[in-house]
Length: 162
Image 1 (spheres, rainbow, N blue to C red):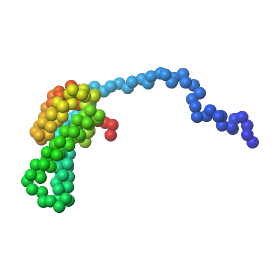
Image 2: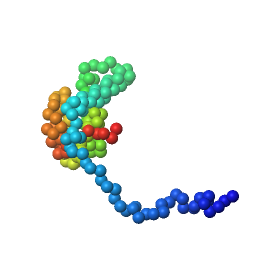
Image 3: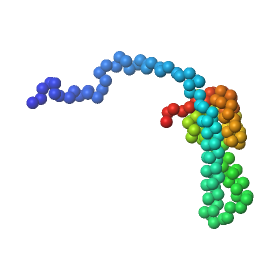
Image 4: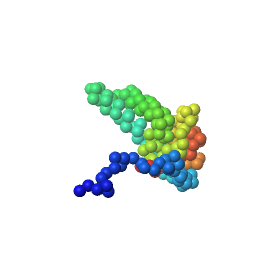
């Protein structure tokens, strides 16, 4: 009992009309930058999250010293702190170039609106380190006056992809 209507055509999985294949999709309207600007509490969270990532690496280094059978002395704490800052700087340079944010910014769901030019990445990392050393005090300036925005020449936005 097969009729012409019950048979599956051989090209069932291809498009029959490609007239709209080259047409561009209409762009969604961009929200105003003020709508996407992160609140002050998120800017404070970026600095604190950067401190937490450094503390995690420092703790990991001290645990590695203890696992190796050594007792962590005062020089070991300085070594672990230096290792943590070095790790954070390298991770921040890579993440700013690839994901438009430092580890703390990404943890706090804040990023730059656009790509950071390669020449500005060291300034952005320095501004983020200054924010962490000031325990987030630079975040009190707000998103428009943030040293991170000034260093990157790109506004800060909240990351609503998550």
